[in-house]
Image (cartoon, rainbow, N blue to C red; front, side, top):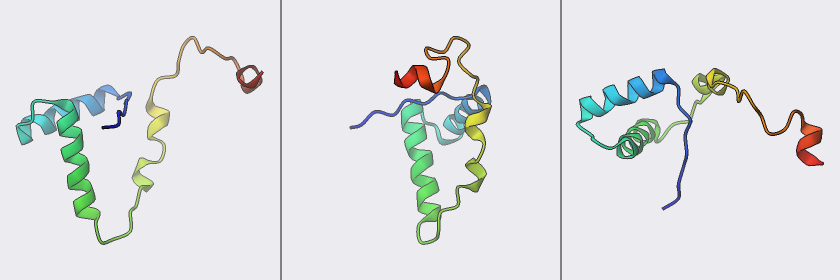
Length: 76
C-alpha cells in the first residue's frame, strides 16, 4: 500500500473527528479512505468538479524557516 501524508488545518481535523463519530470509525486513515470512497461513488458516472478545492492549499500555514529562500537557491 502506498503512503499519503497530509498536513491538515484545525478545521479539517475537527470535521474529520465529527465524521469519525458519525460513522463510528476509530482510525483516521480508515475514515479518510471511507470518505473518499463515498465521494467517488457519488460522483461516479459524471464529470468531476474540483473547483471547490481551489485555494485550499493557501489556508495552510507557511514554513517560518524555509530551507531555501528562493527558487535559485533550490536549483543551485
